[in-house]
Length: 91
Image 1 (cartoon, rainbow, N blue to C red):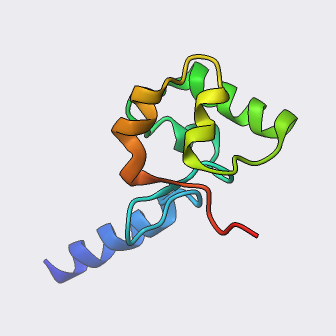
Image 2 (cartoon, rainbow, N blue to C red; image 1 turned 120 degrees about the vertical axis):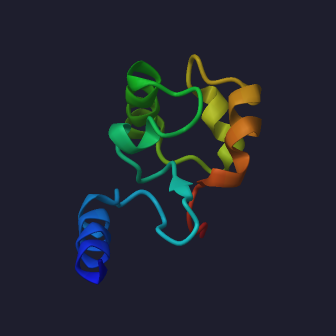
């Protein structure tokens, strides 16, 4: 049983996306991949791709509310996911 748990834990560590914090389950919208962004409630493949494209054109998001500058992402989506979203360290 311990071996199975250890193997499951190791597998989880291998597939844990880099844009997510393992401890908090927080998604850094400035570094998350499109696949990682799809874990946001209300964000599918098209919106996730739009977030990445917006970030590449306009630069990093200054705050979580900036996510609404992406077509199809409204304030309700941001508010519903606010606890899980971050823009990382600000300078």
